[in-house]
Image (cartoon, rainbow, N blue to C red; front, side):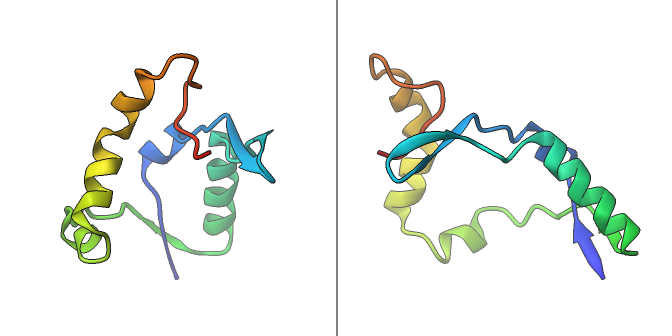
Length: 90
């Protein structure tokens, strides 16, 4: 069996998520990906780096408006006075 992993995954470190409208500490930490990777290796998985397929497959399932939103939301979010450091839906 194959498992896919890229070093960039270790940078994923969100501080919070919303649960029932209230911010909660996020369990997604860089250490979690290390544990999952170790488990995949212990199970005999072949670890492969994912290939970049470009935006084509993403654009095939999402509207141009949504992709534009994702591309620009962080810069827009930073201009909101008092906004959190991370973009979190309200």
